[in-house]
Length: 451
Image (tube, rainbow, N blue to C red; front, side, top):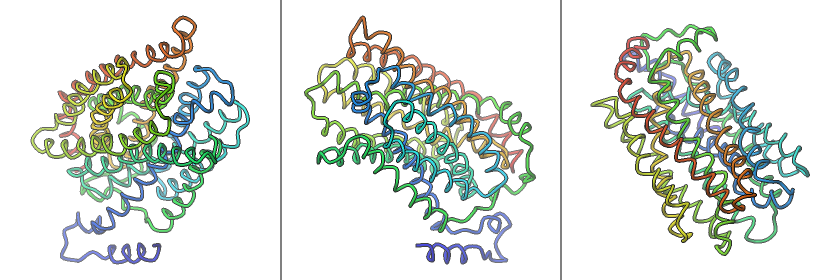
């Protein structure tokens, strides 16, 4: 695999003298671009395998360690997200200056190892520390990856490329469900063995990445771009002055507040609300839903915005807003119905519609940013996104459910806590719509700046 990739690279780095400057600046074949995109998508999938697994194993962890919902909420949310967001900014600063492939490979090794170490935890403190370690590792995954993808694909195809990359989310979640179902079905593994089993393969993928992917040329799609290194404070200041950058950031943050909370608590809800429903079947159905409906939503969102965006950049905000207008009521009804099958069907509707904002959001974050601060743009995007969503969503539901449990019982308290997620979904819709009214002007300014 390594030799083949190396040969492809050596062939691709020889531009023809007859080619225009912009082509010579990014002399890699479409085949190699897609190979790198697939590898980075696999890395992102492992990111979400290791992130999702604690939500899937939550009922078993709760029973084994004697935890309450608030403690679980801290584990699923803020313990993971706090250092993940704080470390992401300096790592992105490094990624805008140094080798991004090395940063991603090291990060993947770290978070995979800490996931495996989570399986060795014998008490709450040890598991919390391991989750902090996973968060630190995962901070170095997406910002450098987004930056590399943006250097390999032109801005007209960037939403589609980043939508493919974002498929790592549903595919990673799907694999986490399937791996758990496979290991639990035979009765030969408990939650600790599942953690170890899903963590270790990431180390092998890190080696493959390092051996077969080369550092892309920065700013190859921007003929006039200033490729001088940008000071840290100046990079942050530049991004904070772009209105539609903020609009997309808040849109994805509020939407993901709901998505992260649901992904880490929905298994607990089904185990409590529908105790007679097969746990194995639940894992398989949720895996299939994420791997099909959620993946389709992610893909269609990117492709649709790339197509409609040729006529109007407003599509970057209107497509996500329109999709969530369908998915939000479907989610609320899913929590109320008595049939577990109908509940799963309605949740699948939410999965499909909520996936549509990923590609457009990440693409706009890259396109609006100056070339030399692309990794920083993604990191700042993720800083806001994860403080609000990853840190807030699961933690909010856990604390609220725990507060209500004495009055309503464990089933109804969790149902009520999850029902409150309709509010951030509505805020997400409003943010995306607001962005649609601002994005044309900011896009034109970005083209003038980057060329």
